[in-house]
Image: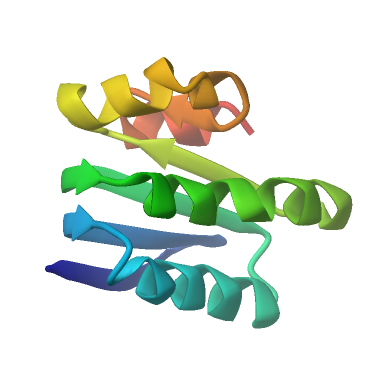
Length: 111
């Protein structure tokens, strides 16, 4: 089960993810990110503090936006991942491709 809450913090759109991202609900994450981008978001922050699990399908959603966002000047940052979820990103080397920060303060400082 995945819950996605969209919050606004000044000029940042924040996706608060709660639960698990797998093949059955990764489309939900995809739609949330696409909707923000389509509505002109320039800075998307992903709060992973309540994310318990992410499958390769979920990781694929983030990966699918990297090139598009880079070309369009959209910033995507992930922060506060649990050690277990962060380890999945690291094992696949995605921490080298996606901006991952220990907390929101650090993510905002890196603009």
